[in-house]
Each structure stands twice: as C-alpha cells, then as structure tokens.
Length: 485
Ligand SMILES: [Fe+2]
Image 1 (cartoon, rainbow, N blue to C red):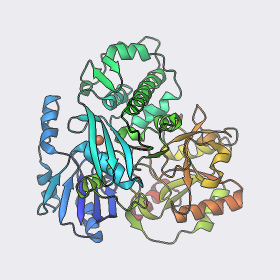
Image 2: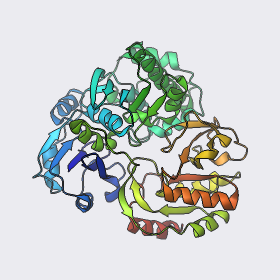
Image 3: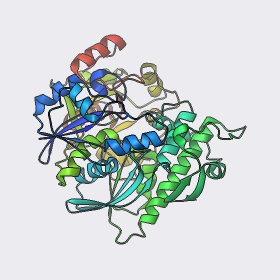
C-alpha cells in the first residue's frame, strides 16, 4: 500500500492506495476544523491506519526546487522538511519519494479518467516552477510536452486579484468568479497593457511578480469590484480558450481532455471549454487542486489507471438514513442536514455532507442564507435527478455529477434560489451509480413534491470545513438548531 501526501501548502491531504484501488482519501482540515489546514495531524493518521498500513510514501512535490523558488520569489522557505513533518505525526519511518507538483496534478487527472489517451492541461498559481503545463497521456504513461514557468502565471494573476478584492487568496477565488456575473469586463485592454509584457496566449509574460500582489494597479475611478472581477474572469477565459486552440495545432489532437490544477475549479470557464466542442469528452477529477494530488502523487509513480468509483473516500458515517423523515421536513419548508456515508474528497458537498432544501419559490435562497451566512449575491447549487436535467437546464455536458460546470437555467422563474444573476446554475446530476442513497432521497422527494431538484450546499457555515464525523454533526446540530440526519 502506498500513501500519497500533500502538505505544507494550502490544503493538506492524504490518500491510501492499494494497487489500483483508492482505499481512503481525506483532507486535514476536516479533522482539525481549521479551514485549508496546511499541516498533517494525528487524528487523520489514526484513521488512515483503519484502512491499512502503507509501506511507501509519495510526496506531491519536490521540496528543494520549491524552497529555492520560494526564496527567489521573496517568500520564506518552509522551516521544516516533509520528513520532519512526517516524523511529527508518527510517519517518519516510512520510505519517502518525491514527484513534481504538476506531474502529480496530471497523474491524478489521467489515471482516474476512463481514457486510454488524452490531452492533459494543468493550470494553477504555482507549484515548484511550472504554472501551466501540457501533457499527453497514452496507454499507461503520461509525458510532458511543454510548460510555462513562474512568475508567468495566469493562476497567480487570478489569485492576486482575489486578494485585491479583499478575499482570501488560494481559497476564495470562487467568490471572485461569482462576483464576475454581476459586472462587465470593461477593463480588459487596461489590465492586459498594465500587467502583461507579452499577451499572446499560451505564451504570456507578466510585467510584475504578482506574489507581491497588484495593489499598485491604477484602478479606473469608476470601476466597481464587480467590473474588476468580470474583467479578471474574462482574461482567464481568453487565456484558456487560446491555450486549447493552440493545442489543436499539436497533431494529433486527442478526442479526450483532462483538465487539472486549482484553475480547473473555475466552473464558468469549464463550461466555455465544453462549449468550444474541441473535445468529445472532458474529465476533471473532482478534487483537481493540490489536495487531489495526494492521489496523483501515487499514480505518478505507479503509472497505472486507478479504479475510480466516486469521490466518497473519507470518514465513514455508517448509519441508516431516515429518508421519509427528511422528505417530510423538506415538504414542510425546512432546511435539512445530511451527514451520511463516506465524506467527499474534494471541495464540494455532493450529498453525503450536505444541507438541502426546496429550491422553489422566491424565499429559498434567503432561507438557506439565514443559516449559511454567505454573501447574499451568491446562489446555491441544484442537485437534480439526471434524467430531468435537460427539462430545467441547458447542459454544456451530458452529465455533471461533481458540480464542475455551470448551465443556463431555462426556468429561472420557478427556481430563483439556484440561479445566479446571469441565470446560470452549477448543476449536480445524480444517478444511482453516482450516489445510491442520495439518489433514493431525491427520488422520494420527487415522488412527494413533483420537483426533481433540491438545493444542495455544503454542511458548514462560511469559513468552516465541511462537517466530517458524526460527533461533528451532533455539535453542528446543537449549535445551529438544524436536524442532522
Ligand atoms: Fe497546484
């Protein structure tokens, strides 16, 4: 058994893999209750040993190149090595190997896909030095074709503006993406001229090292935060569309695309990619950021496809779910919490650690927001019985079990709580193969209500990690007065 680890970054995680089977995978934050915890912890290691004893560890990036780059960019290097970090949590006696950051991303994507060949694109802020990389997957191997190096990074540009708008960098980029729908991309030329020496995607050369932020940008006087967000989002979309168009010049173009790295969480851009129609099939592993690289680090050295079943890979809450009572509560207009089965490995709650409510009517969003304490402009995501998805949404892809794409909602009059300002929704389609118990719950709701959709949002309050164990669930229930099933 091999243990893949990401750590000393912005979201530590572990994954235990036996041959082609992913036995367990989890985020550190879910145990310590510290959002995006960069460090490992003893509770997570204790749970690891319930699933097996690893004989080998693979770390998701190379510490020396990373530390040299951190010094070069004016950041402090990590004062502890990965070996010291592992020793601290009782894993110091297991042999360790290191792989490159973008290789972990590419391997996590390709080896969890069903593809036997693919174009693989990785985009994030920064690993060791690579910021954008393009790979070819063929059979059981992946091979890097080219990469773009730090400080030239479209992801870092996006993260710098996340900070500029008063949001948390490396965590709240999704809020910037949400803000973009409320603004107009008015400042594309101004921003390109100011920040880029060379804007000719996929070639790109930044004028500044954006690790130091972008506060010196000469902001137009009438610019709203929403217009700035819209401009940043538009520039990212221009980049990725140009990148994929350029890749089509690299013959032969594959019919399959694997997209990975933190930027692959940008579901608005993902939908634009799907609509381009360059690729027949797109796979984005449901945890495409650094945490998912715990799986990718192992796959990068085993070089074989993994038996991907689902993202339900974490802590198990094994208890029967009282679907009848849940549906009765939903019919009475209540918000219902579900903590059941294995926790999601990835940032999205997909039915096992979820808050649910009726999406119909003008008050659905307010009812949920009274509890969640999120920004009022942000909509909630819908989970829909897959066969009814096209009745309500213009889907850019056939199925979306992991909420990775936005779709135009064709009935915003019925469902205002799940529609953003541009009438899009981040849809989760649900089949029994995706999640049997959640599917049964949705079917029971449909039978009683005639509506095949529920609002599905994460079982947490803004800024908290997802509820993980049943003990967390009970604490949550007592604190917020919502029944957890
Ligand atoms: Fe990354």
